[in-house]
Structure formats: C-alpha cells, structure tokens
Amino acid sequence: MDLRSLRYFVAVAEERHFGRAAARLHMTQPPLSRAIKQLETDLGAILLERSPSGVALTPAGTALYDEARTLLAGADQVRARVAAAAGPGTLTLGTLADSSEPVGIRLASEFRERHPGVRISVREADLTDPTTGLRAGLVDVALTRIPFDTTGIRTRVLRSDPMGVVLRADDPLAGRAEVRREELADRAWFRFPDGTDPQWQAFWSGGGTGGPVVRTVHECLQAVLWNGTVGLAPLAHSFPEGVTTVPLAGCPPSRLVVAWREDSTPPLVRSFVELAVRIAGLDGRETPANP
Image 1: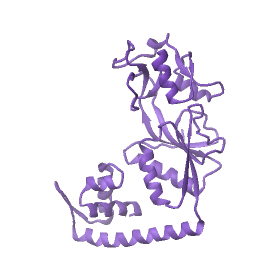
Image 2: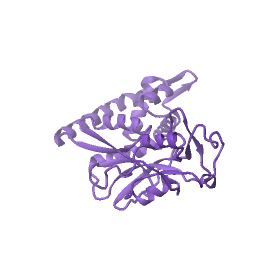
Image 3: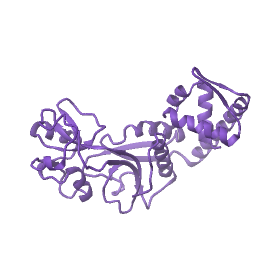
Image 4: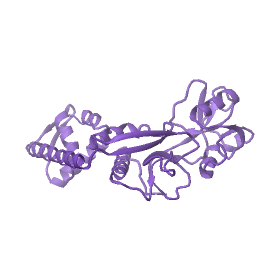
C-alpha cells in the first residue's frame, strides 16, 4: 500500500464513480480500476461496492477513507515543510516540437501538484538538436525522440508511434493504405543542416537526398506544400489542410523518450523522470530501460 494507491482510492471514494475519478486524476479508467483491485487484494478486504451507476463504500472502505485522508494530509505537510526548508527549486525542460503531447499535459499537472514551489522553464528546440539542449547543458531534462547519439545521456521510452510518409494531399500516393520505400526512390526528401546528429538525420530523412534543408516542423510542411517534398512523421500527428500521411511499410516506429544527463540527476530530475515513466505506464505502454 503506497500513497499513490491511497490517492487513487480517495478520488474514487469522493467521486463515487471510476470514470469521474479517472478524469480527476488525469488518467484512463482501466489502470485506475486495476490499482483499486490491487489495493483490495493487498488489504484483504472489499473496499467498494460496484454497480452500473457507480460505487459505494463498504464498511472497510469507509474506515480506509478516513485513514487515507489523514495519511495523505500528513504526507502533503511533510512535502511542504521539506520544500520550504530547501527553498524554491528550478527545472529547465527541453521539448521538441509537439513531441511532449499528450504525456506532457498530465505530466505538467502532476509535477505541479508534487512540486508546487518549483519554477519551470521550457525550452523548445528545433529539429536540428534532438537532445533539445541537454548535451550542451541548456536544459535539465528533456521530452524528445530517438534515435540520436545517447553518449552520456540516459533515456526511458514513454511511447512508440507508427510512422508514415508526409505527402501533399493531391499526391498520386495520397490515400493509399500503405506506401513502400522504393516507390519514393525518385522523390526529394527534406533534410537537416550539416552537423545534425547522423542517426537522427538518417532516420528522419528516410535515406533520401536532394530536398530542401529544414529546421522546424513548419518548414517541413511548407516544403511539402510548395515543392512536393516528402518526409516522415508519426501517423498520430495532425496536419493542416493540403497535407496528409500514409503508413510507410517497414519503417520502424518513432519513440518518445524522457532523457537526462548521466552526470546530472538531482532530485527534481529524478522526480520528473519517475512521473513521466509512471504516467506513460498508465496507458499500458512499455517503459524499457535505456536502449
């Protein structure tokens, strides 16, 4: 039994409904239900009477609810006293385009709740630096994508996204169920400036050449719209009118990661990483160790 399980239980007890409690906790309902069942198993008691309309506390649940609120209030007081003694902290987060969504929305909410006095600075990098400034010491922790040279950097995978080729909507290949790489052999692919990480360059350029040099997602989209250039993007991304994506056969997924320097893991960074991994895990996704 841990504080997280107790927070989950208190939310369900107060909302009297798993769906409403899940929304309050910024998570999905299935992992919340699993956590409550595990708590009941740990305690050896049924805590909630479930029905189609919601839940009601059992006598054991009522007893736990009173104790849990006391424990959580005490934990919050401890955290506040420690934070006050330590003084306000700061954390600089690096992000890459819109890679942090939707993990970042839940992560921001929970991190603020855990560390209410911490000042957060966000540095959004362009596509030429997948470390978002981490290697240069400009940020403390990053939400970004691999592959890139991870020498001196640790990562944990939060999500794997299927990839597609970005095309103009009137392209002959648009609307296909799938495109093979050899069908794009004569196309110009957008590429990054000289000096960009070779692993990163090779993944996103698709091995193609001859296209314009780009630095931002906006420049990539403009290259597609104006020149018919092609490139790669996660299929889940939304695109403006006139641009579409088609699944690319045999293309490995793009992996969203939380990254930090091996030589710098202060408590706030460790807390951020732990929260990011846990939040990603709420959706049932794997979070393997640094590849």
